[in-house]
Length: 175
Image 1 (cartoon, one colour):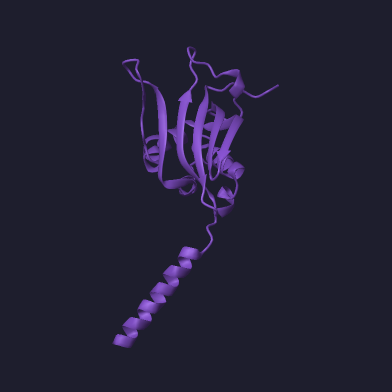
Image 2 (cartoon, rainbow, N blue to C red):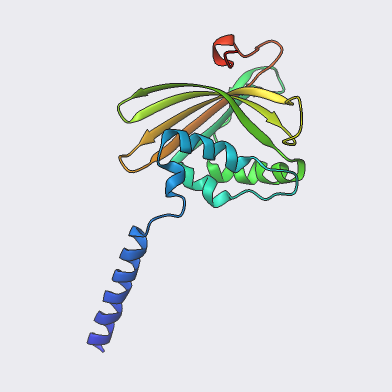
C-alpha cells in the first residue's frame, strides 16, 4: 500500500510539475510590448453576436491587475471605479456581444523605465468594423511589466473623450 501511495504521489507531482511548465498557447501574444497591446485591443473587439476569448483576455493581466474606468458620475463629480478583469467580463461581456464593439488604437505614446512601461493609447470605438465614424474616443493609460519572460498588463486606467475634454493633439495621429 505504501509503495502504491508513493508511486501515485510521484506520478501526480510529475504530471502537475510538467503541466506547470508546459508552454501556453498564448505565449506569443505577450512576448513583446506591441503584441500585448495589439492582443488587448483584438480580444475585446468583435462583431455583434461574437463571443470574446475571455481566457486570452485574462491571460494578458497580472493576477492583481485592475481596470479603472473614470468619468463623471450622476452628480457630475469625477471618480474612478476599480474592477478586476473578471469583473469587467461580468459587467461588459454581454453588452459587447449584444451590440458589437471594435476598439481601435489610433496612436500610442510609450515611456519605459527598467521593466515597467506606461502606454498612453488613444482609441476609437465602433459598433461594426464597417462604421465610418466612431461612437466614442478616449485614452487608455496602460501600465505593463515585463518579468523577463513575458509582458503583463498591470492596470488600465481610461477616460472617454467629451466635448468639454477633447483629446489633446499630442495624443492624436500625426498626419
